[in-house]
Length: 87
Image (cartoon, rainbow, N blue to C red; front, side):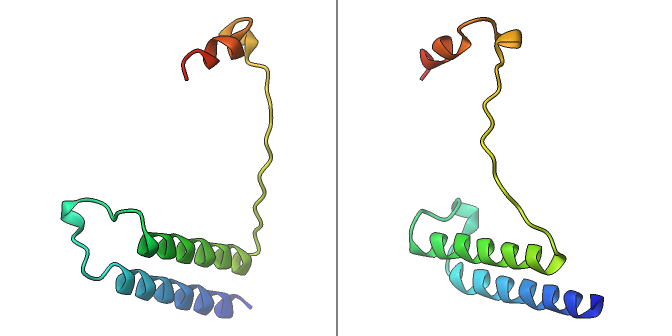
């Protein structure tokens, strides 16, 4: 089971490298990061898919939970009202 996982991870990494290399062809990173657009979105999507595939191969899952915690002990009473003034 483990050798097949390692082979799949290597193949996934090679595919991601190939996709990013092809999509960033012609961009000079010395002049700055890639501008927002179709190429940048496709690269972001490729990273998302490949990283999700890595996690599935490794047997891991992720989840997000939004927790609301009361920081009034550290920031004082009415800290939410005071923080809204900084926006």
